[in-house]
Length: 159
Ligand code: 4NP
Image 1 (cartoon, rainbow, N blue to C red):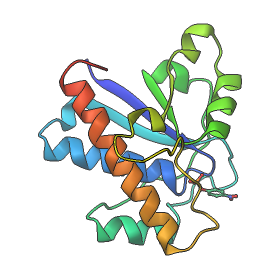
Image 2: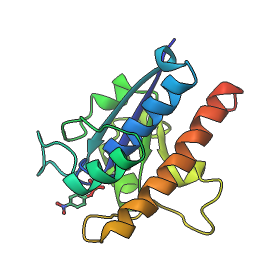
Image 3: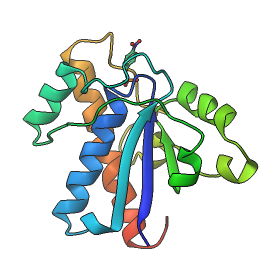
Image 4: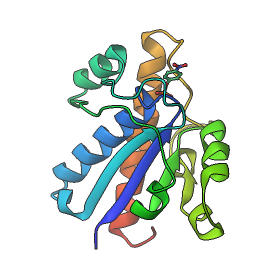
């Protein structure tokens, strides 16, 4: 059975499509691509249909990730289609909590920060949209750390 993972941020043009691309690439490098069904979505629909922000695409490309996702809003059906819905920050988390159609659906919601292993005292993935280049590098560092941990936990049955 495939593990179906949906990453969610606000606009679905910076953090969550990067998480999607990173996890997919890391899984493929471990020869585990077929184990996963990975997607991303946003709680805000204003960028629907757009490619990821060019600053994020460039920063990710420099690390070897090609981001081709098209932004889409998260919807109630996603709680059926996915086993894990991973929020980038507390705002995303609370919006997902409100959207979840049942208690069972709420149990599928995680915070990306639950998978940080080397992020100091950070408790969320910060929104880089109004930041400079350094903000995108911080986000990519956090996402690479968390995605590696998701892979590790799924590999050894902790998740
Ligand atoms: P994301 O970043 O949630 O990581 O995709 C943002 C993208 C767009 C906006 C805010 C954050 N916005 O305000 O349009």
